[in-house]
Length: 215
View 1 (cartoon, rainbow, N blue to C red):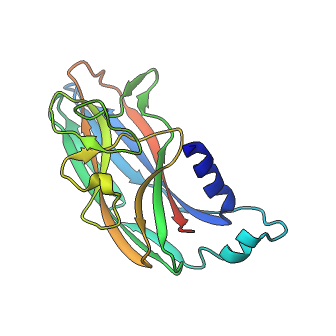
View 2 (tube, helix red, strand yellow):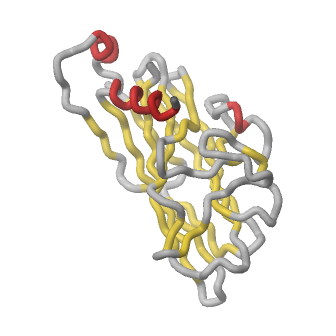
């Protein structure tokens, strides 16, 4: 059911804005790990237009003006010590002429990886969180990489309590922010915690943010 809903959403759209962020985890001489986040140039995608349908007639030009900006184009996590979580935040500012507002979806290409080694996505303290449902992540014995949305009414409701995180996914985009306003912002908090057994290698992946007009 979820897959069908996502598929229908992407087929309906004439245009969407894609923002790519790459994550890099670099080993140090003492075996700790440094995680960095880089912003890559945004790309506008347009689908091939065919004969108009009732739906496309309603949408017509969904993103006549849309902009997404990050508070920092570069985030450095420094050197990560096993068992000591590190968090960094980046604020998203969205402006659009789309009258019904927009939604922010996120997708990663793979877990933080270096060859066959990887830093797993968090499962939160109870092992119950998912890319679409946040869970409490406070324990220093819970490892992985995760994200939460805060400081905004545009954040999804499962982030309403403190210490609520989700893992990222590389299967289908996850809705993380949504607003019917033409201008809004929200803070994304990235968190990483690694075990002592984590192999010190240069881990990397890419996260893609999709800014999609609300139907």
